[in-house]
Structure formats: C-alpha cells, structure tokens
Image (cartoon, rainbow, N blue to C red; front, side):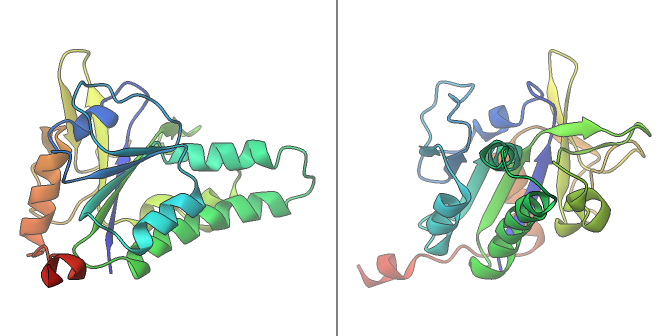
Length: 212
C-alpha cells in the first residue's frame, strides 16, 4: 500500500522547485505538461505522461518516490480530448480516471513508495483554496483532498517559499499530528525523509537488485 501525497499551490508558488534537493537516483518525475524543471539539476522525467504511462511506470517501480507534475493537467488534457463529446458521461469518466489513479497508488504500489501529486489550486466562491478540478463530480461526490492523509500548501512572498502543513481555515492543508511544524521549507526531500521517519518506513531494495 503506497502513500499518495498532495502538494497544492498556484503557478509559481514553488511546487516543482521543491524537487530540487533530490538526487537523480532518488526520484522519477511524470511530467504531464512536458515543462522544463525550474532548476539546473537534471532529474529523470517522462515528458507527456498520461494516466496509462503513469500507471505502467508505477506498476513495477524502480524507485521509492515519484512526482506527478502537474497532476491537474491530467484532468485538463482529458477534458480537451473529450471536448466534442456531449452529455454528462464525459465528466464522470474524467473524475473516475483521476480517482482510479489515486487508488492505484494506494492499492497497487509497495508500502515504501511515495507518490507526490503536484497540483494547482482554485478558490471557491466562499474563499476556500482547494485542489483544482473539472466538473462538479470530484467536488460534490468526492473531495479530492479526502483521499490524501498529507496535503501541503505552497506559499511564497516572492522571496522565500514555504509549505503550510495545517489548514488555517482557508486552505485544505493537513498532515498527521506532530509530523511537521505548521510552516516548513518547501523542500520535498525533507518532507520525504520526515514522512518515512514518522511512519517508520524502511526502504526495501528491489527484488532484482537483491538477486545481483
């Protein structure tokens, strides 16, 4: 049972930049929108990642941590692909595809694998900042953040970047009790280490490596 982690933030808030301290052999990136990373370090990434390619890569993971950057584009590109379809079924299909990916991470990946969903936000009419979705099904029938135990919110003042780890009433940030301070540096490597320490996750070598 793998661990999905949701990283929320507006464009430019530091979601992708938070990957900067991983080494190339530590993380794999599913780059949905095929964007260059916002730092010079070269990290392994699969451009143009789709649901099918992501699930294929996670079905036999070679690494212990992955990032889906930016995961909301899976919904967006799915919507454009169905733009000429009529009726509400397409919205059900789009919601189901995203839900199934999260469930795939939870139920089909090893317990020492963490998958980070780097995801844009939107503001509701009530002023709540939440994960950006398409259509009403994911909001009314299924709250996306409810499928994650850890939701970190990116914030910046234009100079420094932080993760907010608990809600202030305006965001959907949350994390287990005593896992983090309320504000931490937006360093996903530090977050990964903290999660593994908190849950006492020991990284097991791949079976293929054990045979070498």
